[in-house]
Image (tube, rainbow, N blue to C red; front, side, top):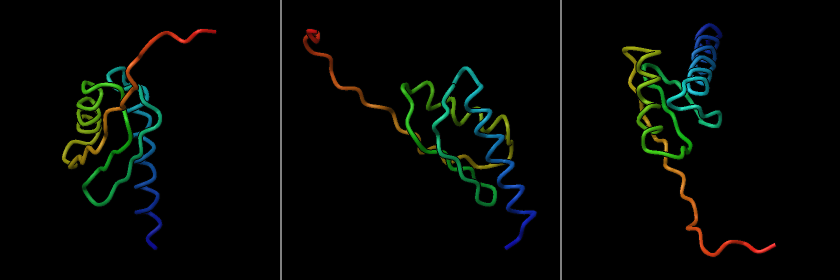
Length: 86
């Protein structure tokens, strides 16, 4: 196992997580991130299509030259029906 490579990958993943959580366009803590070679894979769910697009933008801005595989899905919310009575 190549430790410097593992440490670099862990560092990149931590930087990406921080950027995705702090950037107001995304603001999401629960996304999964992995880095393999020059590809960053991001998966999980967000509330809007704007957030989904912003995931790619944030990663591309942080790591120019890396390929972004954005597999983030939109969260589905059940349709609201009648108000719940308490």
